[in-house]
Length: 88
Image (cartoon, rainbow, N blue to C red; front, side):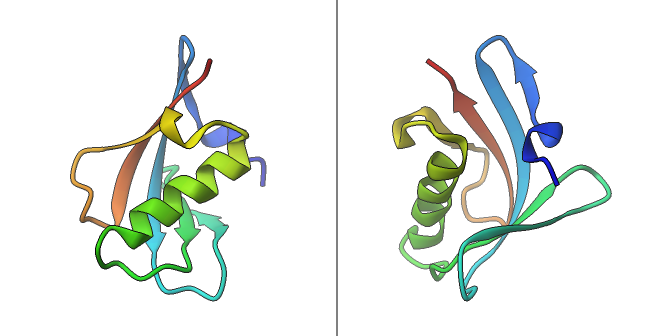
């Protein structure tokens, strides 16, 4: 699976949709849903923003960008998230 196939690109900004599953054994891309949403497993628990922070750390490492360039759009407490990655 090539993750970049699931990225919407506008100028120097990437948008991806993810479904986050917290409390996994390790943080990883798991699969793709029928609506082009990436399923991501995250080690952290969904409390005190730990899962969101772990998601940002994981995406920063996977896409080789700074954590500051990653933003969770919309409701941060839902499993389904839109992610904005700004490239510099």
